[in-house]
Amino acid sequence: MNIGDAGITALFGYAVVFFGLILLMIVVYCMSAFFKSREKAVVPEKSAPVVAEEEKIKEPEKPLPVAPGSAGRIKLFDVPDKEAVMIMAIVADTMKKPLNELHFISIREVK
Amino acid sequence: MDILETLRTLASDSGFAGFFSIDGLKNLIMIFVSFFLLYLGIKRKFEPLLLVGIAFGCLLVNISNFFSDGVSSAEALYHPELWDAFLDENSEFFHSYGHIMSQGGLLDILYIGVKSGLYPSLIFLGVGAMTDFGPLLANPKSLLLGAAAQLGVFLAFFGAVCLGFTGEEAASIGIIGGADGPTAIFLTTRLAPHLLGPIAIAAYSYMALIPMIQPRLMNLLTTEKERKVVMIQNRTVSKTEKIIFPIVVAVFVILLLPSTAPLIGCLMLGNLWKECGVTERLSDTVQNALMNIVTVFLGISVGATTVASRFLTLQTLEIVGLGLIAFCFSTVGGLLVGKLMYKLSGGKINPLIGSAGVSAVPMAARVSQIEGQKANPSNFLLMHAMGPNVAGVIGSAIAAGFLLAVFK
Image (cartoon, rainbow over all chains, first blue to last red; front, top):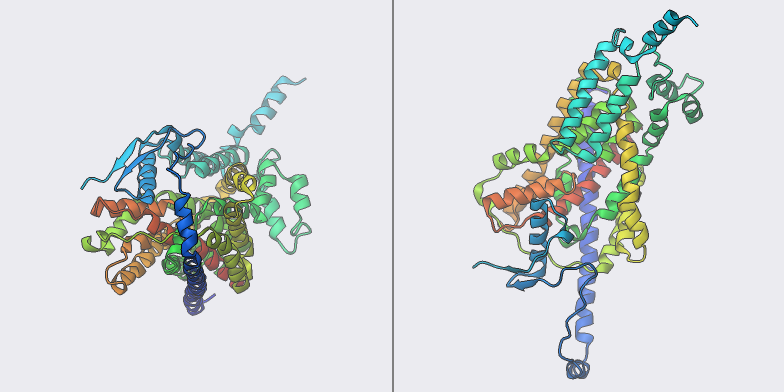
């Protein structure tokens, strides 16, 4: 293979990778747009009386069962679930300990 | 019984006598190389799951294989000349696995899984089952970063041709820049199997060195202000989207490039098993048991290809150098498109996530997280960087599929 051919192959190859992933991106955007619109359509379908009835029969919240092997529940203060999970994962990684050997009591955002 | 004759036979048959043969010194050097790789794997924890196996395979093959007139000793665990015959169209043993099975050593038999592309595909099955494509679905623009980070693949390919490598060899060297070990092994076994040893070792070494290579480039190419950008939380992705995604990708990418079928097919099947919710047993098996078994076989059989007489050449040094170039330019490609996205989004995208477009999952994403936190301790880029990171896996498989389609 000569250098000119190699240059063209390299450029064309890089373009093919971009082309493939851009097309995939469009497909993913279409997919997510479809699912978002479906979610929006489902929410208003819930009629008002049903919602009211649901609220009526709402009992005081029972504590959810704890997962097997779990050390209990963690208290989160002004910290979203996702951020809490990330913090726990980072702590476990830094300490080189598996998550199931760590007990987090609470996470509070320092303001 | 002639005791003297017996002692003489034992001495001449021993491996120690092999060190005095023509290539004996090379074997000795490779033995020390294997010790160094073992040190890196065990003490420095550089990709230990694979590197320890590769290093021990390298040790085994070089203490058991002393060439005499280009032929391995009968007790050798790996016989490169059998594989030469396997690849030689004029040989009566061309593509004869039966010949390998009947004449080969233990590592020859294990190597069949590498040569046939079985192990890399099975590794991809496990990788798929361990990967969460949620961050990618939540931010599809990540796919652009995964594409950009394949820059090194094609630059190193071009560089390798300039250095005199054939197109097939250059393609196999370039794919090191994809930072994806199984893909590099898969492509090399198909295009340039004689280069498998140096390419696999370079690919895994650079993947292990990501925390040392990438931060310098990240600091060089981004400003303090860019590194401090805090990205908004991604949307929540529904279960249905996660189930449909692997099916869509498999259909779409394989139709586009059929040569990617073994890698993309296995990656997406593994992911579908993880996400569909009705195949937990299979998902658990491919993530753990199968992945571990294949890793054992893959490591040791790749190590076996580092036979001294073939590994210690100038070509190996060139491959290691080109691999580093490939790796660095892939990181640069991701970072530059990351910077472009930063500008176009009005400063909402942190360009550090671009470097995660090289597919070493999840180490490259972790480096983005660490560097982001160095600039701004309240910054959490991990989930944002996972999008380009998994996009890089798909991107490197597409790059490999393209090179395979061109050169096969």
